[in-house]
Image (tube, rainbow, N blue to C red):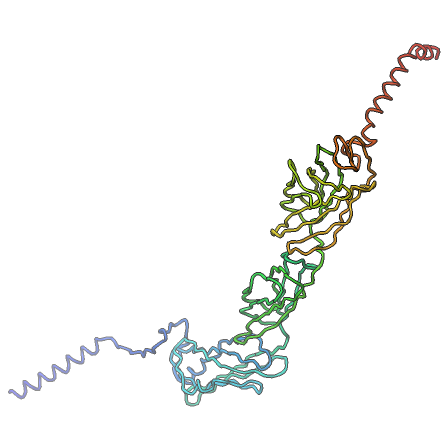
Length: 459
């Protein structure tokens, strides 16, 4: 009886376990691959056997750095391998095959690599590409660790071009002046089909100040150029070498351009011209008046006039400040001085350019001639050196009014004028003479009025 009860209990237990198993849902386990996200049905293909999975591995792209190689350069070629299957696959033995290409890091691919479902693995090859200019097509291959599976392969394109990057001076003045700042443009031209990076220009000179001391340009895109300005202030005739360095990929290259700094006359400078001069005596001193014109191209800043020895500046106008005198403009001035020799009076004109460089010129006014023109004058820049400059004043005829010892020294009331525009000379009597003629004509007409009226009535 006990044995029968035990048998029945065991049977009932087995029946219960079977019922529970039939009612429970089935459970599927999945493997997780470290470093990869779980695949989704939209990213992968559903495969049921390893050969079909191996067929879903393909080369999805590649890049090279540099984009275009110089002959014999070393660079990096990156090949992207993508697994489009819903299961992980192992790949190994990647290779790039081309007679002109040498792989420098082949030891980096000695082990197999697992590529998770829907994931991409990058193979980075460090290569040296040597050959003549042209396009080369290395064959990329990689094997799957699936028995009977075929190797994945794809052809990529790499380009060699020996065309150099060039540098030139694209803008500069015709000549430079000592201590005067001028601007030049350095042009960097990249005719290649790949970008160059980390472009830097460093000037070098032993006789000029160049600003800035270096300039970072960055990237110059393929088949383009950039203009880079520098300011140059020479101390002497010299040369400036611009060193242009750049990267093609990770490879450094350099090229130079040399700018000769030739000193000469500044064709754009301000050119002061003095004319309409009038000289009058005032007690023991003299008063010199006239106009100063800016016949140059550039404006003259902070212009000041004074006299030089043997003349001696005295009050009330030992100096005359014009201020800013624009190109093609003029301003009147007045100077007072004392001198025992009036045959030539040196007038010094000082001014600055827009950059603050100082300049001066001395106009020697020859007052001992009847022409009224000045002699040639000397012009001095901020460096202190002198050069010949035209200093002609008015070339009109002059008149001389007596009335005090002009030739024998200072005297009261004497005057010597040029150009006839500031009193003195025959031109001063034009208006009185004209008025006198009009008065005489009016008197004659008044006296003869009856006779004229009779003549008109007879007609």
